[in-house]
Structure formats: structure tokens, C-alpha cells
Image (cartoon, rainbow, N blue to C red; front, side, top):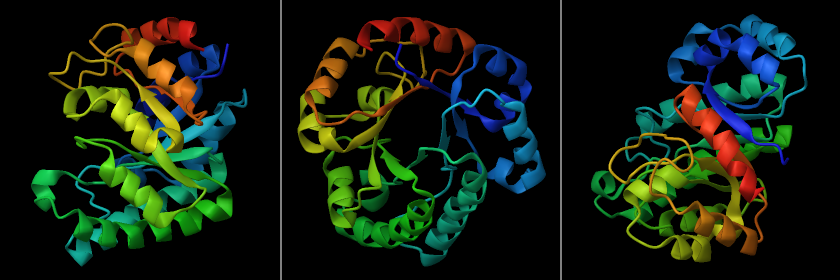
Length: 253
């Protein structure tokens, strides 16, 4: 079966290290700001040694309160500081992809995508300088986006082979105002990672695949028609959701 990563926050990984190792899981490790501030490089080195089965790694960068396209220059500076910090850990683990949130929503920026885009470009160029040196891809994830245009604009403006999109199925189901076909028309060929989880369109429940209303048959059909061959990541928020997703994804691989 094609390898699939499992998303897990760093503290949960430490708590469940034996289970993860026994299952030989490929991992997407999420580092929030608290983890970055409280964990020493020696702790990361110890974790790398404990994961002695050569897993495939991706990372998820911190995102809460951060805004890479912020109008406030100080906010952008703090955001970039957080983003750059994660590359110190990346030098040790060498993840294939690091996922970041773009920080755009129409209510915060009142529709001024041009201002957000201009400020974002400077942030992502600095991030990509670090990523390029380590041969790591940067994936920008859809969050509150109601349509794919802002992500397409960002990817096109930067125009780097190491920058692409992380398509999140759950966020699409919650926030998108346009069809899945429209998303693939706009950014389908730029998808380098997929976050797979389900919901009923009401809350970001991170359910197992098949426990919500997302049309995964259509999603994987469109993905196979695109030029993308992204890395797939299960992003369930419970052991049950992860287990169910690992079973139900098999028919699509």
C-alpha cells in the first residue's frame, strides 16, 4: 500500500511514542509555539533516535495568532521568526514538506487581497530561502478560503518549484463557496500535500474518512486526473478517527 503520513502534535507523539514505533507510522509532526519555546534541540535529537525505523517526515508549522501577510509589520516579523525557528528542527529530521497557514480571510482583510498578497510575498520568500537550502517543499494550506483564488495568486506570484498547496478536505467542506471541481481547476496541479479528514460541514471535527459528508470518491477522482502526486496525510483528531481513515483510504490508493 502507498505510504500515508499521520498528523500528530509533538506532545502527543512523545506520549504515544511506543505505539507510533510499534506501528512504524510515517509522521507529520505539528509544532506549536509553546513546543518551540519549551523544547531543546537535545530533546528533538532524542526523539529522532527513538524513531529508529526510518519514518518519512513532514512538519506542520505553528499558526495560532500568526499572520504572514499582516498589515502590521511587527506581526509579520514575529510570524517569520516563528516560521524560521522550525527550520532548526528541520535540519535534524529533514521533512519532505512543511505545511504553513496563509493567514488570509476575507473578514480580516475586508477583501483587500492585494495588500495581503504584497505582504505575504516577502514572508514566503524568506521562508523559501531556508527551505531551498534543505531541499524541503513548502505547502500553503487552505483554511478559511471560500475559493482558491488567493492561494493561486500566491503560488503564481512567488513561482517557486518548492512552493505548493496543502489541500485540506475538511476545511474545504466547511468554508468553500465553490465546487471541488473549481478548486482543482485553479490549483489542482499545485497540490503537493493533502490533509485527509471528514466532517458534516458544521464543525472542524477531524473525523475519520467516511464519517462525514465529504465526497472522497470525487476528490480522489479529480486528484488522479490532475498532474499532482501529493503526499497524503491523515489528520484525524482521535485514535479512532486515525484508525478508520487508515482503513478507508485503502480503496483510493
